Image (cartoon, rainbow, N blue to C red):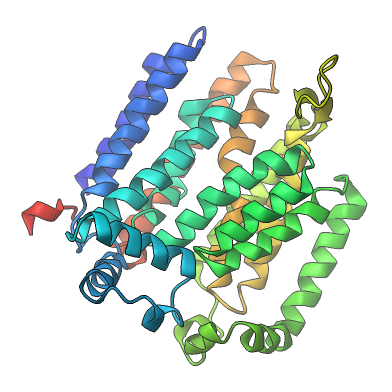
Length: 375
């Protein structure tokens, strides 16, 4: 458990050194490299005992490496992930290679996203760690790969490039089928956030919650792969603490962002040079886009009270909170108020992460941590 507190201090101390004062590109890149570089080492070289599903993914790679056959696993795993295993098995037979390569893709993807979109890099990194997304990188590998691809899809969502957006979401679904849900982001983000939109989201969530059993039966006909969840703990009707906490945190972040007015801030971006004489530019409101995505994420999390596994689907949308909250904070002009709010955020999220670690260690089983060569 010492590693948990060390990483929190490491993120915060580097934030004090490189994330405060006058900012420049060198300081920002240095911070991202030092934090996510360490994250990569820890995630990539973990043993099979670290992470709930690590041993299963290692066994899958070993089976594919020995037999060269992926068809027998197609009923359970997505084709993109299976071909990734197949490709890496041609490079090396040690199963750790699948952990190292996927860890690099995942950690690099998050680092790129935060560097590109966050206005307070250290705070986004801190939220990424304490909100549980870092821990998830050592558990749900396929889901995390899909999320990383979805983060690239966001680039084209904001530029309103429908074709590229759809193609990238389809690519993400080749690592986790649930990524197709993010196609809803296109019509959702065409809305304008107001009272009517919020009320519509609430009513829609309630209706979907009520009729979810019918929807689930239809989905099983389309994706029979998920039939093994029938009768599992995910459908036992019990509301998981994780879903409740995620929903409450998501709502709190949404309300704070609305208070700061981040969703009203627009800026121009270049969406491609289609004319030699001029650059094609358009206005983009990242605040409103992310706000609408967070509302969708909270709605999905509420519906997940019926089927706990949907809580993971909500991550495609709720992850944007790691950027939305820091960027909302940037809208405040009172420096003393900003300091107070930052301190509150740091303390609350540290308490949140530590409480879950103590009360629900089985959610991630990251600690005690050891490297793969130590077992």
